[in-house]
Image 1 (cartoon, rainbow, N blue to C red):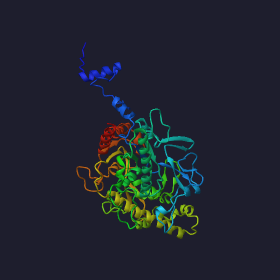
Image 2: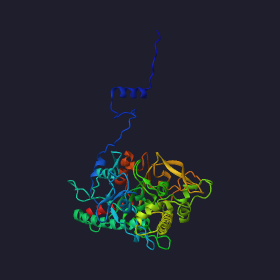
Image 3: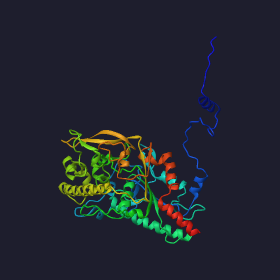
Image 4: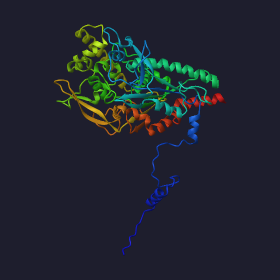
Length: 495
């Protein structure tokens, strides 16, 4: 009879015994268990419970498509109710569009609907089945758990004022235009906080600073605001004054999945249409092409995201040139979109006249977008007391390159890269090695203080446990120079 001797190394034996006996990992060197939720220790709980001037209030800024839109006259939602919609009627298309008119600037064209609230949870009904998609409710829940009090909810016992504000805006409209609205919003909330600090702590005219958590296009909005405040882009095509005037009110910024170098799907959706989910109605190119913001998020030419199929290593396609769109019959320049233009321009009686209006709008949007992207690429160091954190997705194949047939203008996606399904990780970082010569380290005009890579999709970034843990540290534990000065001031006042 043969005897077998089994030798098990000490650590392996400990793991085996742990599995067999169900022992806790507490105090164990050997446990390799991974947990899906953090423990909040005493110090963390105290930080979450703290209410006072040393804790900056937070502003949440949503991304593209992230606010409900309501009709100005009736109050009915034209964006944000997705149940029972199997097709789009003329009134829905008209209400959702950005106006077009010759001889007027984009900001002079008022929409017939307005932003009416945050798109917190989306219900989509397709083929008789309901699908619920978390939009921004999870982000609000995370921040509330960490001690920030939403202004839309009653204050719980022990809390004395709101400290969590949502800036919802019309995501169709020009980003600098919305930056001016953000400035007014910040001034209003700053006045509120100063009043509450005076009431609760006897502190007069406190220099209130805000922390900002911004998703997707909202990150472009806050970055523009930091640099230029409420300035508009000059009419002559020059650059606004880069004086970082928005930083006077902003302390920390956390960007989530922001397309700092643009993203390819904007271009594709303006040529093919926007489909929210498989089987859902397609919003036609003639409609989505009216949104100025779509053009402002197109990929930068330097990334070489769009090339010609017969010369992929040659000069990239200049997406900001109206002549290129007209030649290739893309978006608003596509004569096939006249059916949509008839809905959007009911008082314009001929196809030729409608085309003139559409091309005028296309040209204004493209020129504005080129000017905007130039303003955002200027290299300039922010004030030392402003910090920028970035949370990006890098686990989903994301459109990287498209090739254009020079003869007929057809577009074919030819390459995918790491991203969140919408935004490439390199775009979020604004890594200018993309499309250029590779070098060992990142080359970005943005000074990042903190970068966190998440294995999540674009709208799933805030569902990540890693995001929840790290945004907690960034907001509650990471002091900026402004906060350190404020703490000294508060302690002196209390003495």
